[in-house]
Length: 126
Image 1 (tube, rainbow, N blue to C red):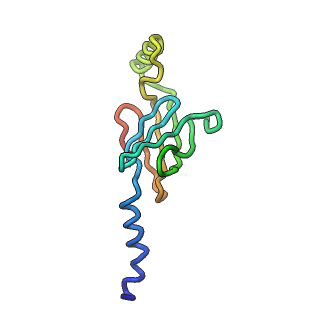
Image 2: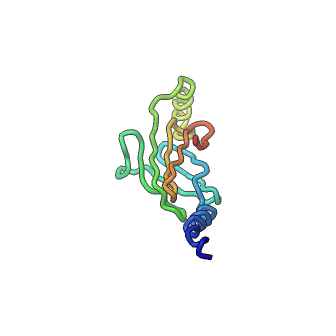
Image 3: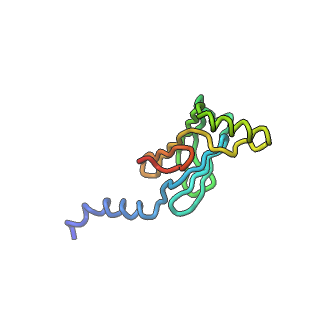
């Protein structure tokens, strides 16, 4: 019994990781970030004047059970076709339909960083 006692913290940490959802997918828009966790829950990160950075915005996710810190970095460069489509969609009033070029870094409850890129297929890079 006493031999198992030192293993207790390790076992508890293992159980916590099974029940704590992790970032699974992100959808990036020019002014909003939507994060889907592994349990299906969705969290939001909106761009405001208070959380804007020179390259995007950062803050803490809201609207879900975890207040995870995140940072959005928008890449102002895009390819010629993407620029043309952005202009055409903007002209017909459909701004923000295309996901911007950028990256999203989310730190989970265990301190691990998850990096996602946008567009087109937003998947973790680790």
